[in-house]
Length: 453
View 1 (cartoon, rainbow, N blue to C red):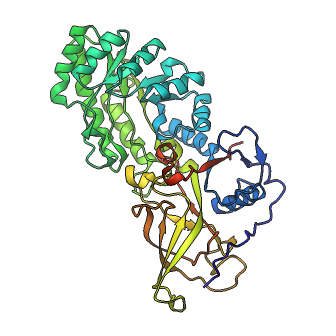
View 2: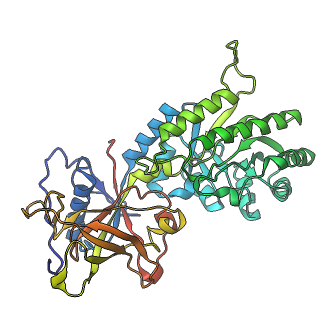
View 3: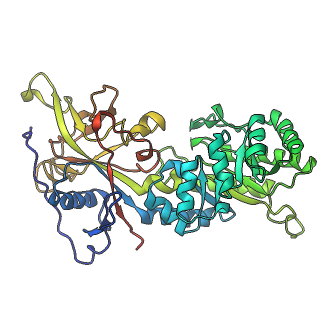
């Protein structure tokens, strides 16, 4: 068993051509400090960042490595697989300034759910017509702010909201949000939002009587959708409501297919290409671009979506430091592969790992260092140790005093020491945005890289 003293990190050598590809910026810090290569593996990149931070005296603090280049790649993939669908990024998923600024510069739209999110986008210079106020139940002051700033596209799913819109946003381009089957999604948003098809006729008639301009239909199959076929069913329902609107004299021109799109490296088996294939087939069936005779569709439907985790999940990796440990064995001399360690790290479920509680995520730790050296699974502790690999049962806990602050209840890891580092990949969605500072632990900072530039 290793000693409990904090080890000195051993950093890998770097080639000169690699050193120009990674820049580090603390959150809200405008001064970029160039470090080493984004061409390294995530674990090696983390180790280099740790080394840079150690020089400035904060080598223990947890941090995200955010790759803006991954967001660019995700957008390019979206355009390739879903060319008819305009992405309106769900700001709530990760409102980080670098993220939304990057997406704004690439002319995406934005799904905003509050006055603050709308203001953030407007302050970036985003045109109001690139924003949808996609919250069916809006505070009056937020609705008034949207209307005063030209954000006219907004959703509703109940009669009271229609009266509110008529009073506070009479020029609204209203979008009726319908209920879909989200039974196979991790977050079942239909419990809270979306009107059933049995009520759409009444709501559209009410909107007509109030003089509200309803321009289309929206839906959301649920966040973390585990069944790509849910999109096909939802598009079919939307077509039904389009036909209802046409019969009432509305000229629907917008279909909002919502969110639920998987990010990169999803564990569920539902991939973006699978979803795109099903969605494209449904759109071509129910909202074709052209008629059978080759003429253009008279409706000319604009199709948008509200992806969140799709863009940012894989762009953020989180590095945490082992600040303490307990040996769960009758005596230190009895540690073996069946004995358990308890590792305490400096971010937890009240911080970035709130995704475990709120977003139903399962996270997977990877050893970055072991006894102060870059971990190599072929060796026991570090690339230079020369001994065979050993794994031990362990659990990983957050830093607060609350016993529910458990990140990983059970896993196998090499024996780690106080001061070693762990990496958690795919941590960009619904993590930092909902983090608190419970017990006085600060939120993890962000180091940015761009592997596309």
